[in-house]
Length: 195
Image (cartoon, rainbow, N blue to C red; front, side, top):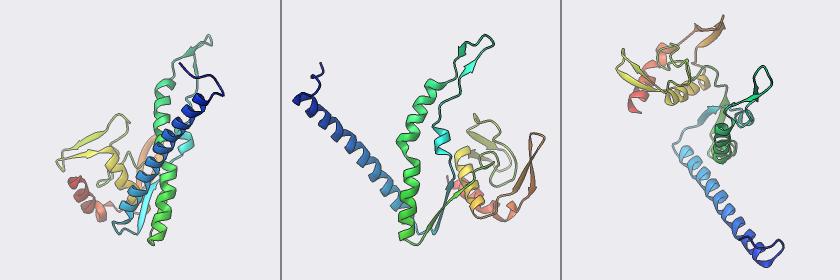
């Protein structure tokens, strides 16, 4: 049973709860600083990351209505948990911390547009991951399992280094216009085999 409002017991409980929240917040910030320091201590001078629309990622789903005006399930209950996870991870805060620590070490953190990076195979400019449900791809030519997230991370690096192909969307399909993948494909394959 909860103590009455304004009572000494209620204030004591509020203080105890506040201390728990403070402990969680400090643990999160400590993890972010340790992760940033471990990244910067690798000696790399440039760090690329996706320029994420964090506000858009944690937005509510649009309501769905049928022809009579009745509301239909739109997946918002599942999205609520995802929104909490996004907020709890505090990516925006982490990128700020990483930027400060990298600047102290003489490195830079650069946000890059992630367009098409998760769809294109990083070592052979071929559109593979068209459906978000495809998490892994077996490449028969290279005898290699390719993880979608690792592949996208490599492509973000390629975007940052300006070696990502020029892509145009024509009538709904993706067309690769210009590419210099041959120069970087061996390095990418070494990275994927090591992952």
